[in-house]
Amino acid sequence: MAQLDRVLRSNIKLRHLQLLVALDQFRHLGRTSEFLSVSQPAVSRMLTEIEAMLGQTLFTRSTRGTEPTAAGGAMLRFARSVLAQYERTRDEIGAQESGAAGRVRVGAMGVALSPLLADAVDTLKAQSARATVLIETGDLTGLLPKLRLGEIDLFVGRLEPGYAAPDLTTEALYEEPMVAVVAPDHALSRRRKPGWADIAALPCVMPPPWASLRVKLEQQFHRHGVQPPGDVIESSSYQAIVLFVQRRGAVGFLAASAAREHAKAGALRVLPLDVRLDLPSVGIIAMRNVAPTAIALRMTECLRLAARGMPARAKPRRSAR
Image 1 (cartoon, rainbow, N blue to C red):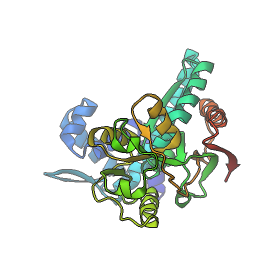
Image 2 (image 1 turned 30 degrees about the horizontal axis):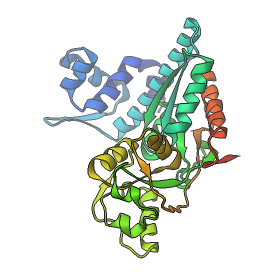
Image 3 (image 1 turned 180 degrees about the horizontal axis):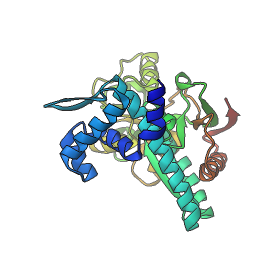
Image 4 (image 1 turned 180 degrees about the vertical axis):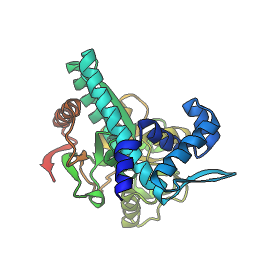
């Protein structure tokens, strides 16, 4: 253990960590060497050097490529965490030297992109045009690990109770209902009171099976005495929902504020359908014991301001857990 501690503290260099992450990304010595602009024998020698220092095999090699071992997985988590902190510190110091306001990395669900995050970025840019905002979209499953590794500074989206943890802080901003949407020229857009039976007979874009929203939507069909649609495309991407609603004449489900933004642009029509779902609030998740950078704090305040400026359709909330 003492040797391992000494290796991690003194012997492992950033280039070693960058190599491990690249190997995990490409799972192939040749593609890793091309990415790092070094020869393949040099990649093999460096990996052997790291494994010799640690006394552990980190990757198994075969004709099919490389695969991390259990020890390799642990080192990869360490490598990603260190590299994320390195980039964060480099960006913060570089921003101070250049006079820029810094760089904040936001992980966002589709429900928070428009208008919440868009309005918050507008406010931040009005304060400092040179501030940089990196936005990575996804869901909690994919973005929470990045938050814990320091690859993003904060998460904005629905606060699913199942993901609450002692190492996280959450702040609810507002409640966001869902609505059903179709293409502007869809036959249902001309119906005064479309029903769940009408939707069940049509193609639908639904969340993936593992999403809690999928279960709640299917319960709505059953509650109205009809089976969920059989012709389904599964996606949690708002871009995919809009695409297939327009291309396939499908019915999709979007957050009300995002749907109205698309309707205002003439891309969609919101159906007068009562979609009653018990949904988590939209809010912010951050790491409890990680001090946020100045720009991350400003981004958080801009999100709060944007939430307070949301129209009455989204009920504001200001509570922290």
